Image 1 (tube, one colour):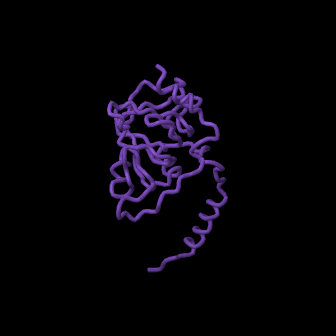
Image 2 (cartoon, rainbow, N blue to C red):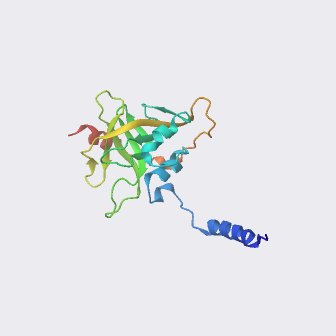
Image 3 (tube, rainbow, N blue to C red):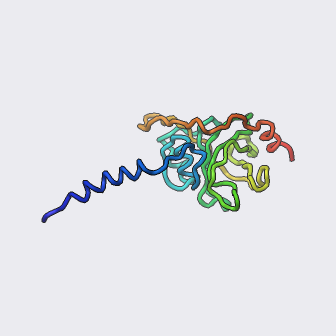
Length: 191
């Protein structure tokens, strides 16, 4: 059997040239798409698959918990409102039950989902204060949405004991220069 390897040798450099020629996004905030690839790039946590699977996939690989930290991924559970779950990345901690997150594909911009929102309010409304239920700022209503979402917890960019994963590198673009702390607290507590 004869094989011709020339096309492969030609194809690989061409493929590399295409990647080099493709315009690189100047900022992760320019990303448009699903929440999972955005959270992976912004947090450095290397998990793939639907958002609702991240919590179980992180077990034994990354440390997990119920205390927010900047750079941690918030793993939303699958629910009727979120059949694929959702992931967002903590960008600021305002107070024990109020944080800001940066995420993609939540609110609508010009009637379409997919864009990144930076420093939006995430409010812990769980009875025990354990971040198992949250409300999320929603652009269309310019405040916290009325839906309560179940959350598994936070996935931190640190390897779990004995796990062989690279330490996650969090992007510096998670938070803006002048986040609206007061607005975030008003969103959470003024009803």
